[in-house]
Picture 1 (tube, rainbow, N blue to C red):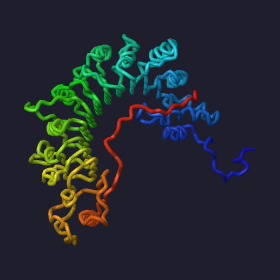
Picture 2: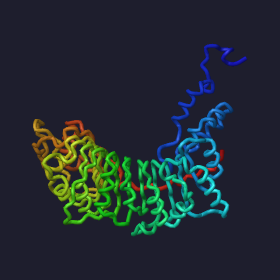
Picture 3: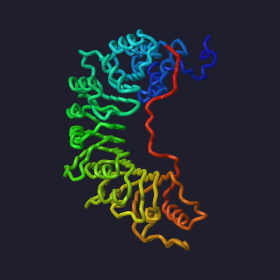
Picture 4: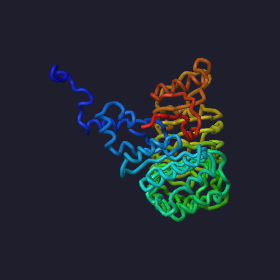
Length: 434
């Protein structure tokens, strides 16, 4: 007699749920977006070990086995995942430092690639050097047009970035012969690409380039942007983008861009690139290493209309505020809600003094009187700093600032955040085979 028969009012156990309900629950714990992350990696394996019913259900559902990690210590699991995923598109991570235990491991990798490459959609190659990046390209099937199917491509190389793209002959030949026309997301770390091969790609929504020592002429870069009219996220960090001082470049309109980061340029290049990009729908802006804020404002923000009318989040790092902030800096962000200021120097009383309204009662402060100016950012909800202001009890200026922000309900937060460090790989390992 079952427990349900003994006590008809008792609730059913989880195992008694219908298969379609269980699959909905299981899907909540499935693979994360980042194909390199170990988070939830063994979700399907763990579920299959709970009970016989769950094992049968999960193994017979191909979509739970689509995340493949092709590394020597995981070949057994990868083979099982490829088999169970059947005809589903695959998210593949291929880390390679060249440390194969024997020749058979290299052969095993090639066999797994051959068995699955036509189903690859999200691909990440992570290598210890340029040599091993070329090795991965070399073992790809030469006559199979697998690149045409790729929707997300990430190329990560550790160590220094070459100063010339000629260091990657196999990669360049592959992209020239088989351009990734379906590509939506492209992330590059220290790998020099032939940018002319990307000028025919029209479906890019995310372009993330970091630590690239190869010179990238602005007009070549502009051609890529103009082809990608659906681009929503653009990140450029520590890239040798060549912008001539006296060149008269045309404005580049990116109508769908919502998030923009430009960092680790020289001060001039960052401001100049911002001035050349027209981003009417931009909502999040992060600029770093811009030198004097007044110089950045003069180069980029002195326009008849607000430069960033839709931006709600502004992050600035490694900046000198100077002793006076130009009015154009405030008027360029009329919809600003969140202001993040990191690694800054100079006087902050000007920027915080604007957090006051014309109709506010004068604050009684022996040393500092509030400026009777219009509210700088009417929509502002919060400010985040990673360098604390002086303690309110010890400085009259800070007391005045605290009074101003409290009166209009703006919250000041303190964070240890700096410019985000790149996390290229996970150190965590798992040995549980399925």
